[in-house]
Length: 115
Length: 111
Image (tube, rainbow over the protein chains, first blue to last red):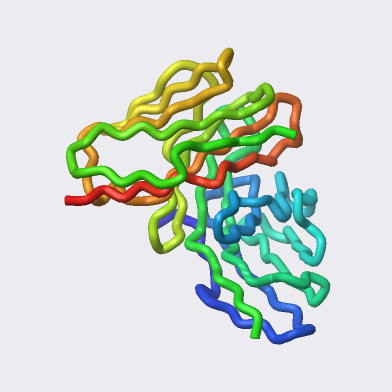
């Protein structure tokens, strides 16, 4: 089955700790995205990548880092610099970023809680 | 900055009713998306529109570019339609890959 997976489903972070959220897709999509969702707010873009070895900052990139070494994988690291990391994190992918290729397919999400 | 406003914020309907959810935006766009978020958090893309109207099953999405407005209609609503419906737009000339999302409309359909 083709799809996009995220792990873990729940993640707990201690103060000052970096944590990495996994996102994998087997849809052969070029573009991948990371979003953050907070209660009562719309999704906000953290980072996106249009192609392997390239990525761009979104609206709220501070305190986060990503890599895109493989087409299938786009891990997100929440660093200790992110002071308010508690949120629901969603990964998505699409064939491209414009035109008929931009429909996004979402993973099930990871809930990050700070201890 | 483009603002995406959805109305209503919350909507309760009886099974079988016709549902309309509205989305307004403030600047020119190249595409508008409707998405559905299930109670567990998973999100599914329903439609991508740049003009006119699209239909899939009981769902219909329309867009009026001149009025900067889109509607999502659900005919013969069913409890399984209960979800948060999200509108998102891509600004014309905006950053590739960057959608602007509304806060969503929470729909509850009672049996």
